[in-house]
Amino acid sequence: MRAVETVPTDGSTEAATRLGHAAADALAGRGPAVLPTGPDDPPPPPDLLAPVDDTVAAVVTTTGSTGAPKAVLLPAAALIASADATTARIGPPGRWLLALPAHHVAGLQVLLRSARAGVPAAVMDLRDGFRPDAFAALAGSAAYTSLVPTQLVRLLDAGGRALDALRSFTAVLLGGAAADPALLDRARAAGVPVVTTYGMSETCGGCVYDGRPLDGVTVTLADGSSDTGGRIHLGGATLAAGYRGAVSPADATAFDGGVFRTNDLGAWTPDGRLEVLGRADDVIVTGGENVAPAAVERALLAQVGVREACVVGLPDPEWGARVVAAVVGDDLDPEALRAAVAPGLGRAAPRAVTVLDALPLRGIGKPDRAAVRALLAGG
Image 1: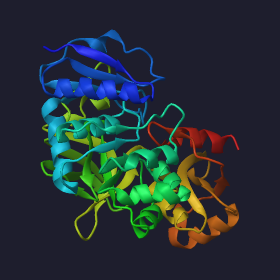
Image 2: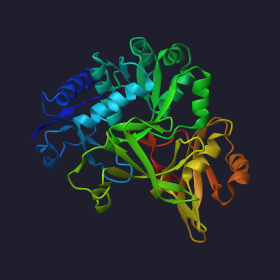
Image 3: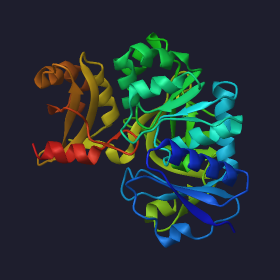
């Protein structure tokens, strides 16, 4: 059995670098498994610090998208398979720039990919938040980076050195939240080599790039419907060993037969790429019709001036639930937006659109649907 060591991070370069060294040692079997914690995380309970199997190199907590965060056991072999499959897909080994919180799986993987390349990562100091100027100052020394959509928006909006920095990378991985197609078009038109990623802590981070599984990764769709697609099942070399500590009955059976049954819905595009439609528990049933929020959000994001959108359902005595939307942007007219998207959406069209200064976020940049729902329910 292998000991588990808590490695606190506070957003500083020094703390992330310490985590990188500890994680690289764990990967090589030279030290204990690491349990990264963030600046606002409570102390881990004793059950998370109990010894783990010798194969486990890291214990990473999820962002808790559907409830309490869960602790995921990541074997060294799975982390190595993920890092090496990424390199095989996007280019030769090289230095990475860490611009994400190091204690999340995406940040940890940036550190490990650089370690696998034999060169330490360039690490941003995030204690004062993400700053385009600080990103640009470090970018010249790295070939790769990983961002969430809100960071990409800020860098594109900043232009100048920040945009030049983005263009200088061999690849810019984009994940953590659904990417607006208009944002991708804007980035690629500006010469940014964006690669979209889909995955989670349970798959050592991103395991599907630009809709295609990495080498050694399997993707199947199950329990599908014509309205909302099928539930995404992931398997293969990057799969976690399971959860540790208390989990819900549903989570206890999420790993089965060499696959992880996600709570995400997906469909195959005509050219064989995976399109992620959103979470199964986000589907809104209105008047007996299933509405995938992602489809409504894409329609809103296609409108001029809309930078962000989040669609949720609110209780309705007649329809069961009514579709409502929160948007962020410049000079937006809520009624005009609703009218613009209604013809193409039918019953899925939002009954109301609310303009916010910013969407509530959780984790490393995902819209907090529960917070949005509470805001809109409260008027």
